[in-house]
Amino acid sequence: MTEKTELLQSCTVKLSLVQESSNDYVTGFFISSTLILTCAHGIAENAGIGGQVWGNWQGQIFSARVEKMLEDCDRFDFALLQLVLPLDNSAFLELDSSLKVGDILYNFGYPDAHKIGEPSTFKYEGLDGDDPPLLKFTGDRVLSGLSGSPLLNQRTGKVCGIVVLNRDYKLDFGGWGVPISTIFTVFPELQPQPITFPAHPFVSHRAIDDPAYLFGRERELTFIFDTLNVGSGVALIGETGMGKTAILKAIASQTESRLQESRQPVYANLSNIFNEEEFYLTLCDRIGIEFCRGGYWFARRLRDRRILLLLDNIDNMKWEGLDRQVRAQFRDLANQGKSSPLRLVVATRTPLERLFDDSGVDSPFVNICSERILKPWDDAIARDFIEGCLRGHSRQFSEKEIYQIILDSKGIPANVIDEGRKLCDRYRYDGE
Image 1: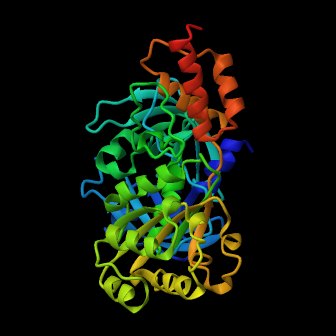
Image 2: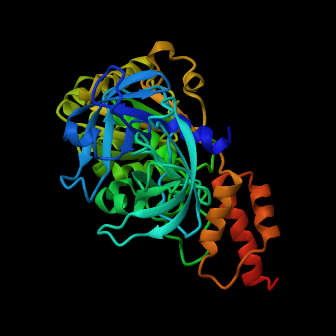
């Protein structure tokens, strides 16, 4: 089994209208830890918006509801499902509308003939003349049950469409699928945020607080909003230069469109806060309430508010006077389920269990924030970033220079930017 087949298999699910084993089912696949994309005909169409659908993921039976679907299922044959309860899964497939004639497409689904699932391989031939158009592919046979399964583009490593029709049950003639470009048009919230690069190819920001440098972090953002939408907080763990600040600010800008409940995003950087009074002054000012130094009045003024609190550099939250009583209150305000006045996303260089060694159970963040460790960019993401920065500029780096930047930076985003800026400046100002 290839790596791509394993990824597809780990992300696909079998969907039906009944909890028990059924012969009437389709395939779907995770596009986040709680969202499933599938075809509309058959299962979702019969369930209707808000209707219940049953799924089987690696032997686990789960329930989902039909979140989004258009009435005209014949023309727009796709639907978005939301898990009722989260599963212990972290694998999902990314979407991308890029397609070129001749692209090899990998597929995994649950056809009638092989109900435990099997892989297929197709070749993209182009778009047909329908409105909206369907993508046409040839290759393996498309059997009943494969509808809704993903078409993963070998060239991009991302899903470019979903299977909806076969050409001929008796011949290995391939079939048709809904292109991801059509799904992006109908569900624009699923489209990755575009990256706009500055006029200078590389601008040095050690904190990377410019959203333009929020590159290669869509999986992290998806995890964060999925976690927030089930009522938990998130702790971003990563060394300096990993992009924690950019992610926090991106969360603030995307809260309205991606957070299911209405909350006011409030960002606070604790790097220049040195005592408890400054801490509460900052919070009250950013939230928009009258200043009070913790205690009863602080809790009362937050009682009717719903805040998404984004705390940067919480490693600095160790000043003298921040006693366990203050931490306990802060924890309580963020630990009241979906009605909590505060929902937290915090950024730190230190794992939470070591952050407040003196706090024990009163630590403000342990067990109410799910940790997400930010890893360095891999070679492919770092290369895409460098090439994106240079796109449209007269100066281009050689393959050897790009490799050296990736090697020297160790994939840390801020270091990639710095190394690229240094090389660019040598060309611009030193005449190399």
